Length: 177
Image (cartoon, rainbow, N blue to C red):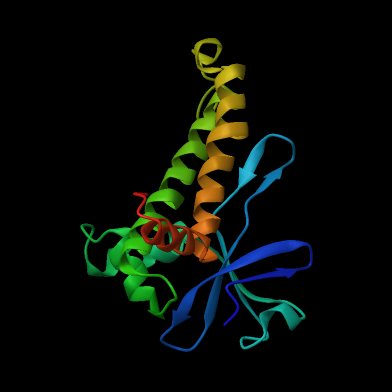
């Protein structure tokens, strides 16, 4: 299975194959509507064996939902690593890489929510009486231009195998990563 491919202008990273044989891919994040990040999208395609040749997406879901639907049937104490292992019978990721992937994606969701609050001045149920204290353009810029892109690049390096190659090269050269 290709680790990374382009399809209709988007980049997709192989996560794993479920018990039913469906291959799932993480979609590269996009900055949407000039104010928020579209993150955590997971797709399967109509051409399961060669998704880059697909005419359409078979299933669109979100990483957090995919993990949490595995968690709650087994109790609220299961974490995303266990959810990942339950969803995917086959993956190219090591157990250590799975831990990093779920940590980064959970951090992306947290950063995204924080960024939204900074931009909107609250949680968006209604106008927040403390919105002038919550809104923070400088912090919003830092989250959206530094934190989320950095987390995303670290994630893509793990998913595309670059991080593992860099670690192996560093070990060969006697460097700690």
